Image (cartoon, rainbow, N blue to C red; front, side):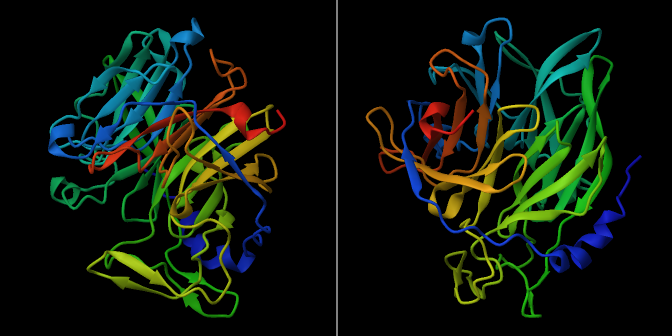
Length: 403
């Protein structure tokens, strides 16, 4: 049975009245390089319409050298890589599918044993797909009758306001809805040797904001769209969801079991927050008139969020500032700004531009003794005049942060 939290009605009324923390002054930008990159994916017919988007890291507890990186490729399905960035498995989407984001749930009870699973949002079909992960690869264990995430029927699915971002914890997946402010929590359940899910809670983030000068502001978007969330991560130890509402802000929301349990609070707004803007239907872009100064440091979209733990509650929260190809690092416990970095061209790889997704682990891996950071690169080069994307592997030591 679906439970819609009473918080949904309170968010728009209270969030901005409480205010958001003022943006800290820009800190010196740290420039680092990647050590490894995955093969180029090409978003054209010859490349199988494959467009890299969101990564996740699976740790093989029996043999860390056989750990895997799993990345979505939208219409191109899933790609699985080893720690040297070599593709070891390619998984096609079901007919009509489009894989958007992926996260990994460890220790999921499946039958009489615990397994690790990759949970993927299928934006094309408005469903989750669940894959059992083993060193030999991924196996689809999704129930054939898994329900639609948000749509009422197939006609609504075809409008593509469907499942988008995903973050998992315990037995739950938090999923965002494309072109909408809605977030849903779904409980994963085994049924007859397969995995399905059911809704346990929903929450709508604001679409309109009251500014400090008393005026109202809505983000500049294509007509008919609301400001969506894609990048998300759950800090399970703290019971907190971080949700990146692309054209608005990075939010912090408390979780309790399968419910949202607090009014969302802003960690930091995007630079464009509160600024007047005009949508151009030809370019499908917004022209922003920066004059109010109500925004933060992140240049929209605010994207992929991931957490590097250094203790039970300590560590770092990393998010992508997609509009200017930078990454912002916050203290995990306090959410105070720590540093800013970008990934530039190096001897082995090109840099990272317009990154959509990120994943990090603090587990020591071969070649990465302090952990591994995986970043989506939205403009891989060289590209032979084709739209090219891939994933970059970054040695955590390059950030030179206390651990």
